[in-house]
Length: 436
Image (cartoon, rainbow, N blue to C red; front, side, top):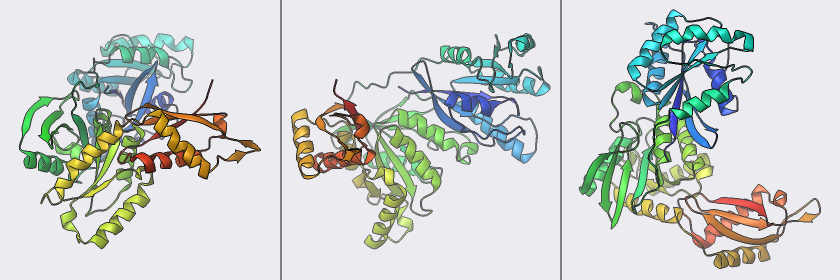
């Protein structure tokens, strides 16, 4: 199911980053008692009472013509546009300010569900300060303290009550849902258009579950596919394309709904840190992944250059050692025909199941050649292994003591499974468990 998105919005210096860090559970945003420290939106995933959602920290909104403050305001406006629910944060010590009223006007225009949180209410004696905030017109203000973590449970309860009904992503059809992600200007739009132009059998364009996104259905090689719209394809406004951080949120939404994720790199500009950040989200989500090197027409197409680029990818993306790499040009459509078969292969492996008896034969044969390690005089004993899930393939190894199951041994098991059964294009999860 697509996760809801929550944006924390307010004027500068009301404690947005402190609240964000409290909800995330770690110090992600830089917290400093100076207005304007948070200059880009920062994203994280939060879970409250079994409900998972994405949360955005934003820069403080100030209505000014100063270039930096204008950019911060643009960032916050994008966050508001993408959010399902907004936490409007104010400072209880300052009372209602003119800046709060200006932010409120911006939120009225968005027509988004908004929960008003009054921060810095650090003790019960200060609760009377919340009443003047009713004047902002967002209903009951929720008193909280970011510093002490007070009142956040009640706030999150109200936030979740305002979540929209999001469609269940359990698909009844056999279509392969894939998305095209990457930093701005790597050629995502061109790649999608190239795929559609080559196929020329578009069944329909229908609105997807992501607001303002379009799911495009195509049929190729006796298989139905659904291309999930991502940043830069049909989104309005130059401000989106010029904001690199923006691509992260759009990638998160697309990844949530995908079976296979195409991580697009730019052959012309090479690998950037943002490439690894975005790819990491797909890997952490357990999606099948194909790395696509676009704009291959702009470099020397020789096999030697291709091999060097592939080696660089394997070095920079060691966590994606299972992902196949496709070199192509969306502009000229050279090598484009290689892409669809690889997407199909990655999807098939993402849902592949191995019978328990066959799996155990492979594991036990491997252990006969490479005995289990001994840690502090105690040897790890593998009793049996079984596959418990797909998307991604997940295996439980029952052992005498899970604490003896080192990361390197999990990697050993994963390598044996991959050597015997393939699993190109999909991550694999290995879980150690003690048999009860």
